[in-house]
Length: 147
Image: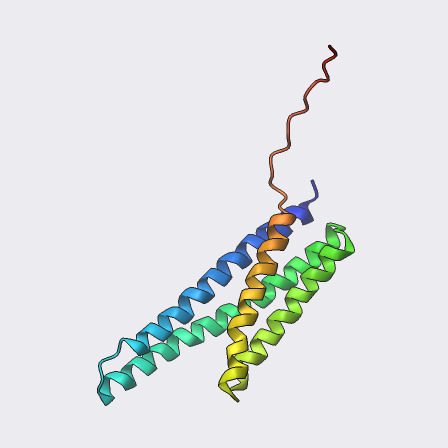
């Protein structure tokens, strides 16, 4: 088994954990604001606290970019089929689009695509990680029996 295949699997697992952390962080930010008391002081404090959480969300997204770059490199090193390498590249493009959608701040219906794109990223990342998992136990060979 190639070290690149194992590295691809580990990076894929790390990426899935990063995606889980992304969901946790954005939920924490939203509920920090939503659960604030209905007065100016508490709402201001909630937005201030949520801003710190959103910055962690953004930083984790930047780290996900590095993880996906590692996956692209390992995909070439492992000599995976072109389909896998291209889909890993698509994952990189989707993350760049995700960053642009999160930072546009133009219209709510465009920003809503940030969440939809996140679901696509999670699905594609999970699919690639599962399909190329390098740590499966190999099936024991069964001796052929003749009747």
